[in-house]
Length: 227
Ligand code: DX5
Ligand code: ZN
Image (cartoon, rainbow, N blue to C red; front, side, top):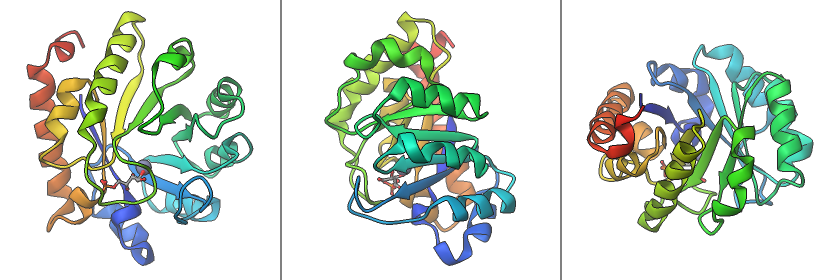
């Protein structure tokens, strides 16, 4: 079952509760936390996540593009996030951090920038509930999808199947009607979309249309048949 997570990075930050409501029916709300150090952009932090968690019944998928996630990630669980993603490039102790996120009651997820390979992390996969493969360089919405990431998505899906893991595979960056089918065919099952959802005339309808596209492509792909 394909999940669509609209990214509020492309929403109106002055009207976050309404923007969450505008994508009612989305599986999760993707919240991009940027610290101006790990990426050259600054967005929001714990207090806004806390308020947003109270304002919407859609669970929050917090994507931390920050330095020192070992120190800060647990606070996002306490703030009400249902899933917390840290970048492996920034984490000092990813196994310990994933265990701490899970112990605090959220889904633990790890993200890879485009130049970070999956292979060194094969043995860590059982510690995770989701793996995020970035399909743009993190930092900004509205960038073009990097189709050179498709082989990494495919190889990750093979590793998940090889180990029989219940691990979600998320893609983030440039996911839109023109690119979502290739991602699904390669093995992704959770799709973040910012500009493709909030730039649409009807965001809720954009979520439904993206999900339908992803599900059709998954059903047609070999890996989808086994799930
Ligand atoms: C980029 C963020 C994304 C961003 C995606 O660094 O992690 O979540 O909002 O935006 P689009 O879908 O417009 O590429
Ligand atoms: Zn993101």
